[in-house]
Length: 119
Image 1 (tube, one colour):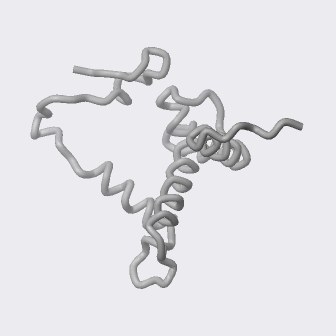
Image 2: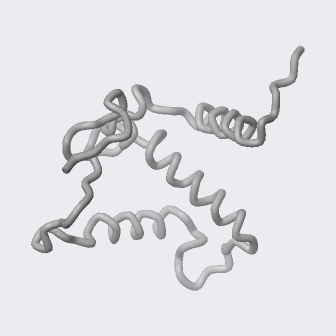
């Protein structure tokens, strides 16, 4: 049974999440292993035998969030020819790093309930 959070944001059928009892013949770790490899190759803190580690869990979480946000919203993938967010129907445009920073800042203000400064 395919489910989506909203009909406006639903992507193509292959991008929709599925729940229930999957067929064991179609279970594969290929996608997650590829994701782990990409993360290790692009983020030095996940390569082996390195001193570029996070001393605080908060810093690690921030680095991961930045990596995945850039990977999904800013980086055009050669196999898709668009960003994964565009392919899933979440975004209509490729984000710039400036867009990503502005969104992050706005989300932080919203989460902490900080009112914008009036000029």
